[in-house]
Length: 75
Image (cartoon, rainbow, N blue to C red; front, side, top):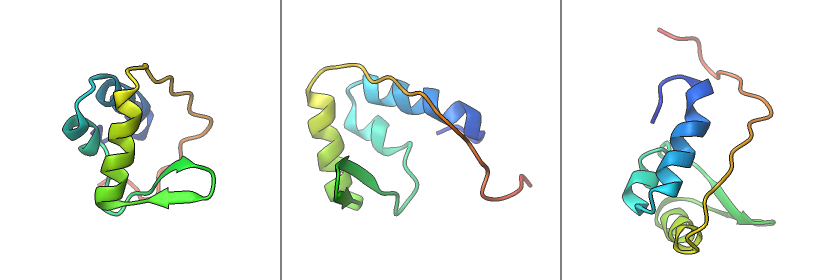
């Protein structure tokens, strides 16, 4: 994962498009939430399984950030 917020979308897309579930899992923070469909949010192993299902479709992802805001100041 990138340490800079502006680079994270490209890192996520590259990990997703790799088709490697472990590469995709590495871009998530512990406790991160994935919403595979409206009203359903998953974390942990369920998040990994949902992402694997999406990757198995074999389609590339397009990431278009609308806003990126740091939650902490850099050290």
